[in-house]
Image 1: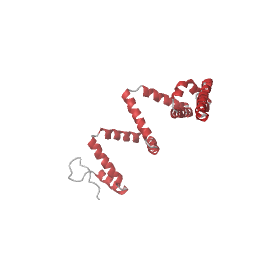
Image 2: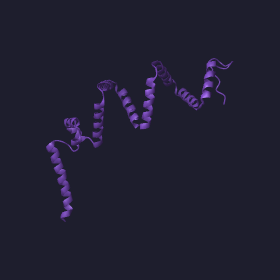
Image 3: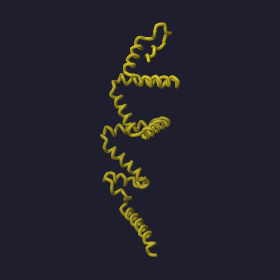
Image 4: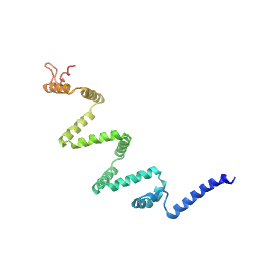
Length: 191
């Protein structure tokens, strides 16, 4: 009979004793494992810290450690970005947060691929970047049907061999075939 109540009593004692220690030292469980500067921040925000799940606490620590690893210039850029973000209209903030959510939902491989593409874009000359951005604006201004046509043409282009691409470029430089109406495209490549 005594054994049945022994385990619950020991458990209750452990919980109460742990709570007494926490109250006595003013530290929630796990805070003692933090670095001194991290512990100081957690203690200054103790109520919020205690309300966080272990995953949220870890995310806060990771963000803090990332911030600490940044240069003063990077921190200033981050502050400036946050200031600009706060001054945006609500719709723009919402769009940015949605984009950020979509980014976080991407696989790590896809994020790396996009990051490399962005870095390649940044290495282009300003003139080349401007031309690309202008073409993108033109594409966005097209009707849905025209965008679909451009997309199909792009997919056909991707399937072409380098020789077929070269031949098509040459025909486009020569202009439309004789007798074609004004503005007519050059003949498609032979198949």
